Length: 388
Image (cartoon, rainbow, N blue to C red):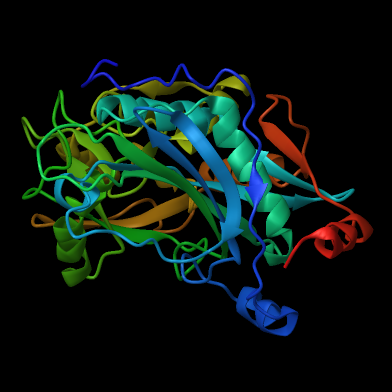
């Protein structure tokens, strides 16, 4: 084990078998249909979860598909004191022929392990990460909303050792939960208003900005509250050293569309390497668009919006997909982006990305990951054979 650089688990030498713990308190079908009719985002949860344990002695072990229920934590559980916790987010989309598709789950698995390395946590083999998600999707496929909805999946890991001392924990729990999802923002695809913070910083060179860890999001909440006080939907962070260069939002990456058709997005390093971000870059470049990963200053943003050089701004992430920015606010004042509406490049990229994710367009990049669901007859037979 190498503390500070992540920890691998060489003991996983053979496939682990997922045990199923029957849930005798599942939500009735009628109530489930009511809940998923308008689920919003992050408020409704499915019947099951998947857990896998890790200890220094046994590595990864005891994978289970089990009823969704609270964890029991000792007051001295290390995650409560030292914040060793990371997470991912991805979606499952309904498809034809009794299939559900995931979007680039291998990238989530690799980013999850990059976060684990940064926080000195054990890396989870990619095949276990994906298998855990597949098991949960099959268990709770009935929770998939219709009419353009999706099933949002939240894999996460936390230190569950009972100990007070600043060191990496000796035991962890990996878990996946699922939530039927509608629009992330209340306005759906409507343009949002953002607040450029000159008071708070999200990350610095050498910090945890590129890791998807809980502390990054906790540190963004005061800035998000400041944005809300100014009537804005989201906060935009600038670099910690100069408070000039645009980095990212509290939970999303950002893109700038210029009048010559080129697109600019901040470079990686202190920002999260978004999977939606990477997909947009690949999609745009494959179609011959010039897209540059380079620094872009807040004062340039203001000047280019005023003189017309900047035509569109949009933000992206797994939860929100692609959302246009219509207005920018700061202590210096306010400005519209273009006409304050979604521009043609934003609309086109959003449409094409969603079409790939939902199986409505050719998957020329090989991004979709299909999951074969049980037939209703097989599901009933399996349930009948379980010991309740």
